[in-house]
Length: 420
Image 1 (cartoon, rainbow, N blue to C red):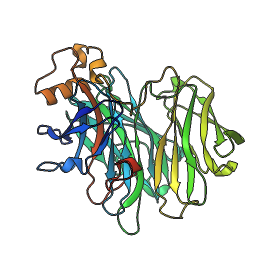
Image 2: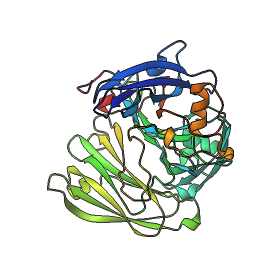
Image 3: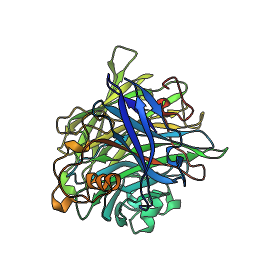
């Protein structure tokens, strides 16, 4: 993982590691001093100390009185060197759900699901899967499971797991399955629950290439328009664009989205005809080769809702290789950017005066919040009302065994880069 100073003054940050088994005490793995605008990476952060942690998460906490910082994580495949970039997750109370944009199962790619319960109480979750590619063979369904307090569970073969637990999904051998996942805590708000998915493709030489997409919490979706930047379509790269209707019931109604390409090499001019997509609640759709089909080599995409009232997510995938089967095929997940007034700021913003300190006082029925969990573990005492002190930003990390891998970004590469 890496931490970086986003202010003009020095800052002190303490890094805590937690086991995803939900057992044992957290350990302090580092106290990091950063100069103004400084950056530092901790390699194999879950292995610092003895015994090492194979599945868990870390918390970055500001210990100095002033300054602001950011954090990120990377999981590297030990065979291919491929990595997965993990954004920090900001604790927010009172939200009702989290959506995982896409789960995949086909001959080339497969998703694993990551679920974490960062609270002091067990969490009973409903996983509502909506099959979008092959609904005639089975439209999906709801699967329930319980996570222990502090547990992080990695479910390899996510769609096969849902199928085995009773979701209506066509047989694995019948073809490809792709859809979105809507996650709710049946007993309280979704606060303190994390969900995300890693989708990868095996490498012929061992290990795999792939990408990681974190879940999007309620109110972090777009309702009018969103933008996906940094897309490319040239001899060595291709880009796809995905959209998801985040409504979970028929009451949300259908929405129509307009996808438009903008050319970064032509002063931001729009290119080609917009694509109109109508989605039912929970439905996923991906437009492959969106830029290439419009003659754009370097650009971005605007996604605008033109009909309906429901919320949506949008994302981009940039794959290595100008066409399928070329180069590694490795993908990078590009989350949307939206300025919708109703949207919360997305994970990844920096911490200044304390992320948790800005939370409202939780009600007694919300004792199992992220804040109470960190207060309990870091301070060694149970939650007793009020807001904890100090600034904390959390980022999920998992140390994969058996040469499992995902995507990465250069600033957090384990071998270092020009950034530090």
